[in-house]
Image 1 (cartoon, rainbow, N blue to C red):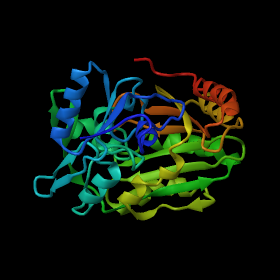
Image 2: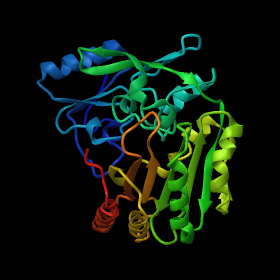
Image 3: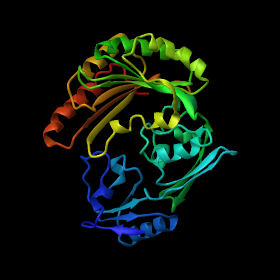
Length: 345
C-alpha cells in the first residue's frame, strides 16, 4: 500500500472524479495493488477513525471523500478468462476496455459499460447498462462470485460470459438535425417489435446544429441484423458507419464523448410510451443551445430487461468554467422535464 497525502505528487489526480464540480479533499489516498494492501488500508482507516471511499474508475462522487481515506483500487489489474467455463475473474481496478480485450480473444463478452474507461466492478454493482442489455440483461445478472475484504471493499468479481463477436453488425447512422423527429418516430416504431438481439440508442446533441446519432447493434447473425437495419437505412442517413465492426470498437465508440475534466449532470428515467407529442417535446428541448457534448438519449429497453420500454437520459456536460454553470443547469432542467409520461413504478 502506498499512501498519498495533500501536497504529494498524484494527490490531485487520484482524488478527482469524472464530474469536476466534485472537489473533495481526502486526508489520504491509499494506492492498493493487492488484497493485503486493501486490508492494510482498511486497518489504517479504522485505527484513525476515518470514513473511507473506494475508487476504481472514478466515475461518480462516491469515489472520493472529504477528510477521510480514499482506497484506490484502480491499480489492481488482472483478468483471468476461462474460455471453456465461459467465465472471467476480474480484479477490482479492471476497466471494460481491459476485460473486453481479454474476453474477445475467445469470442466472449458480457453486458458492459458503454464507455470503455469505466470500471467493471462499479458497473456490475450498479445499473449494469450496456449495448448487449436487451439480449443478455444487466451486468449484475451475470455475477457468479464476489471477492471482498471485510465485506467492505470488492477486490474481484467472477462474471459469466457469453458468445459475442469478435465482430458484430454495429456502428452508427448520422442524420441532419432537421430529420430528428422523423428519425425518432421511425426508431420508436421499429423497436416496438424488434427482437432482443437489436440494441442501440438515439442521441440528440444539443442545439439546432447538433448531431442526430442512431447507434445500432445486433447481437446475432449479421444477415438477420441487416433485415432490422434496413428500415433505418431507408431513412437516408447522411453518414452510415454500420458494418461488421469489432465489438471492442463499439464499446469504445463514445469514449471521446465522455472526457474527464468536465462538469456533468445526468438525469434519467424510464418511459412507458413515446407518443408523438412526447417526441416533439423532447426534440424541442434538445434543440435549445448548450455546450457541444450535452445531449438527450433515448434507449430502448424490453427484451431481457423487461419493464418500461424506453429509458430517457439527459446528460449536461460542459468545461469547468463557472460562468457556464447556470445556463447548463437550466438546459438540463428543461431537457429532463420534456418527457410527459415518466414511469414511476
